[in-house]
Image 1 (cartoon, helix red, strand yellow):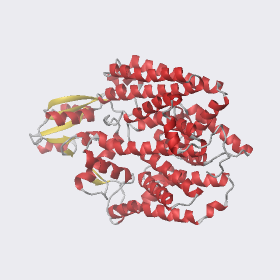
Image 2 (image 1 turned 90 degrees about the horizontal axis):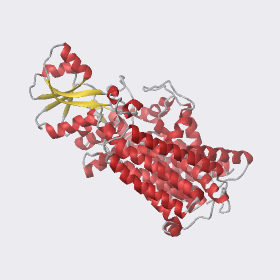
Image 3 (image 1 turned 45 degrees about the vertical axis):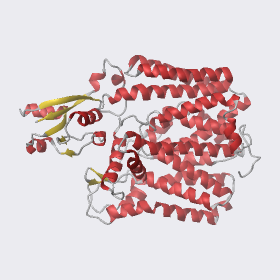
Image 4 (image 1 turned 90 degrees about the vertical axis):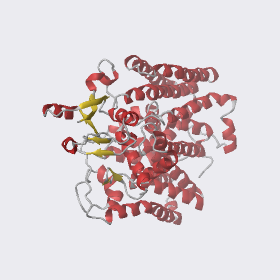
Length: 570
């Protein structure tokens, strides 16, 4: 630490690692341990939940193709070159597939490990500046933030980036304090892997976290040390595997058609178009409906139940900086705010983009919560969190009443464990600490309902998943299966056979009696109109959207939101 005397906002001296480990098992910390274990468990609970959105199916397919073709340089989608995301998460998924087979569990496992890496480094970085108690609060905030739990069930690239980003920032700060080859290698390795996960822009929060800490502490000379030149060189070296694969697949073959163009450079796409070109809508993928306040209101649910506390903490920190009050660190603020502003002014905005900044948000929020604990100024904190607690409980009750679901009894049984944890916390702690832990418990409870009731019920209405399962259990292996429309990618991922993707007219022209065709409503209408005879083997209800709508949640209105898939023979 730069100055061990600079403890603010109720911070306490750093506890040695072994003492901190024992502290969580002390009698006064047992409620914290119970809630911590529940928070960890809820992030693991969705590891076997089938894909209900398309991206995980697509990413799983790309990694599956790597393993099946033994080609770990080219990204191929249904026989065509695919250029969008870098390779690192596909390499991790492919490694897991080699060990565990082509399963949902195998796809999600490496992402979850990187997510927990983010939790560990968030804890370590917070503990370095503010002590054990604040670090424990930060870990719980990150573990129970709504969109992190959702992203650990609906896995894309964000859990990877979270872990790699926080690992890189932590080790770069260790390099800042006291030069070490080991910390430099780890920091640059994590930074390089983060770039190979999402693109060059990931270096922005890593860089601003360290640079901002220098600048706001007025240590301008520290920015111009040789160690940072070595850091840049090593990071570039660790990115070279991605550069090589893109060069081999695309830059060596300008004749390939990508985005309906030839002469597309994979390296240029990776270094610029895939991120900055997308943010500015000047690349092959564009979007023009950006909202400058999109993430301000999105965080209210994505970072729930902590968003209001985060905004308060952010305001207090900025006010301290304006007043010239010295803070123990500026890593979290400097890492979070510039990237949040870039996301906000960009044209391309999706709710999960800010997930990678949640560890910084958790640090900022935890410091404020610890201040409330220490100073006893808890009225605003208690009102906000009790209102949120009540709102979430009412939401759960409403969902149970409106949505129901086949696993409702399982949810009810396991919910008792969470409620018991809350009661135990109240009996042992009371006061604002109970309010905090009770908020954690209700966050666990609502995600327990989503994972055990909502997602399984939703999957009953995902035609691509149900059709794949039907193929696997009811059709002989020698059957030729044709998908005659753009069926979502989980169908191909879960189908344990080779599939053919051609239009319906081509499927009819095959005249193969050993053929089964997957069609949807409009294609069935076409067959009827053209008086082409067919036989329905199985019909599947399908909810075509990724976001849940109120009519779908209401069982009496659900049929209005559905279309249908059909397995037919011609």
